[in-house]
Image 1 (cartoon, rainbow, N blue to C red):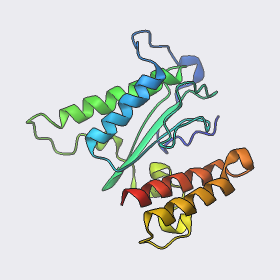
Image 2 (cartoon, helix red, strand yellow):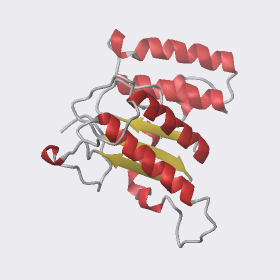
Image 3 (cartoon, rainbow, N blue to C red):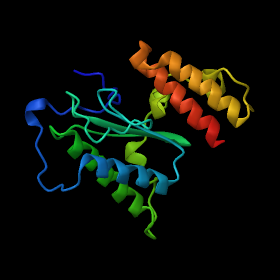
Image 4 (cartoon, rainbow, N blue to C red):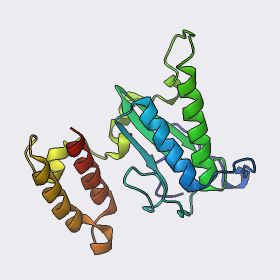
Length: 194
């Protein structure tokens, strides 16, 4: 149906059954900003959004004017385990991202209540172990320093220089592969965050 890597075992909503949500007032830009804030509040280091085209920010969240043919949205993160939340219930990307934001917010808020349950609040989003390669936008488990071709303890200026060169090689506007370009961007972020 699209280039969107929909999580294994998650059912897709048939296009004819997608319904607009008329109660959401926020723009796509405001929604993605709120979602990034929610992920920061959760303390998740490695997370990534995904839509069906490359019109995204470095974290995979759609740009404010993204209009992919497939309006589905997937949010993946790793926090000792792998998680994914996906929505394609609306024909509008903004609404699907907003539904994911609302779910993450509501679930995170439950974790602040003095109630004990048999599992974590995010258990419903936990992916099976076989889905290792699909987490946080990494199609491979290659370490960040190997993606950039630097030593694991390379200084910041070396990381930045190597990343700049690799981004120039892999940039889609220069005939490079968008997935490889994204791996380079993420590898740079990982190396600079350490």
